[in-house]
Length: 277
Image (cartoon, one colour):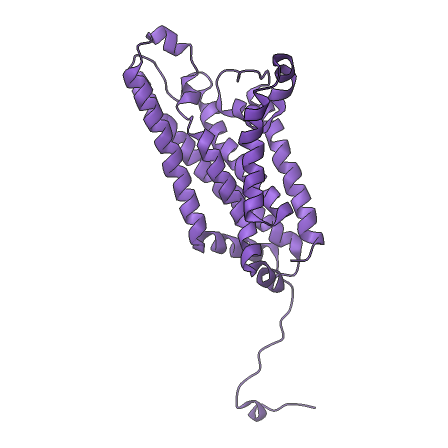
């Protein structure tokens, strides 16, 4: 039976939908969501302010109160010290990475997203790419800002500290990568657990609590065990000297650190595809 235009109130019917939602559409959707969610913006802003602020205050205080000679100060890893706020910043990036996926489960929006885009693989990887890119940019902003501000304090003490100093550029870039890796690890854990508090607690436990507990192990155990922990191995990326108890190189250590994140993301992908929203 043919339906006339008059039967439709003079309106021309829309053409039938064709094709299927693609990765580009999913990527655009995830970028829009991450920019429009207020909690995400507050978390990232807090990461920058708190991490850079703690680094600046700590280095300013040490530089203005130290009685150490320039020769003694030069023997320290002042590049890593200039970014020591990363120790707290990693925990905030864990919150960001976890919220990027668990918040949709807590609000039920994940069902809407999967209704609009039933193909789960593009949805998951678009989330992952957006989270990784944003975390990397914010991480590098934190790392470079901390170093550039704090290095001026040490130059006032007669220490020639700049991006051209030995291994300084590697450490500063590595600091941003470490923060991005922390968010990626939390994203994977969030995809597995689908629970914000659980994902944040697990991420903080792996990066922070386990490291503290391991420090109470016998020395001969620490020499074999500590270097494989996420914080110790990843910490090599933003150091110019070997981290205590770790004999891994900068990028080898970072590679070990990223194994944790990759494994978490791959398991999270499997859970995302197999389990109901």
